[in-house]
Length: 78
Length: 197
Image (tube, rainbow over all chains, first blue to last red; front, side, top):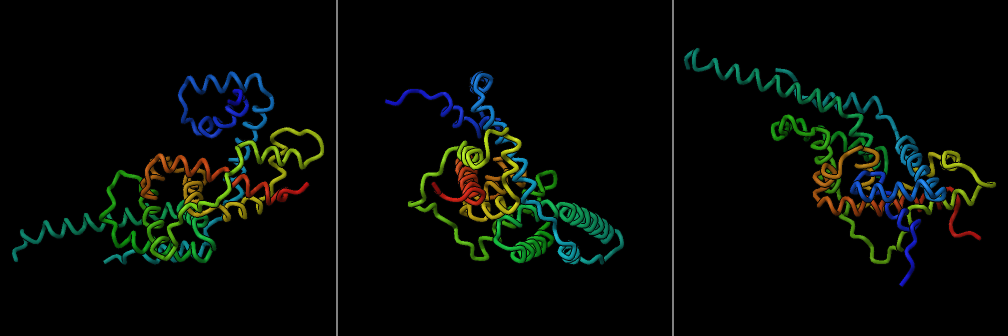
């Protein structure tokens, strides 16, 4: 049996924590650990930044011509 | 036919025309947001553009089946994902041989190790380029990518993503969890390289 590793547990909790899909008790437990653990706190901070970066990096504006084509698909007014 | 009998029909037609115009305007106003998701559900810009046109053509034809007051963006994405499957995208099965993805700290650890000395989390993110992200996202297997794109890029809730993809919410959550890890692993490989010494 392996020993309980609080940082490994915190790593497992990261996505549910960020997505706010954990209970208040689990959240409090994660925060207690994060308050005292620079290692995990850095990685949680990185995850927040990463999510913002990914969202921005994949932005690709819709071509103007496509917008015109879509408008052209509308039902003609009688 | 008497005037009195025709009158309600004319009113009904006018109401319907107004509802249709309103629907079309609302759908078009959402097109940028729909495209943002569509662009990353398929491999190329051309495919995304074709898919958008097919989606809007179908939406305008079947606008009566949309329930006003419900989520129009999700309704449009549902049409789009169905058309994407109809276009021949294979429903991907999770390959049995797929290696177990790394944990959630993997990318940070790789990026931090690749730099000179310790640095804060904000600086470490800057070691990733836009190309690292775009390339890595395209490498995530479809089933996982669909969920990541809908939730993390399209801002859909788990429930909306489940409805759009016609899968249970639990499947959305597990695919999202794994999809993000696969994405991070691919970004690490792109930014830092594979298992170099």
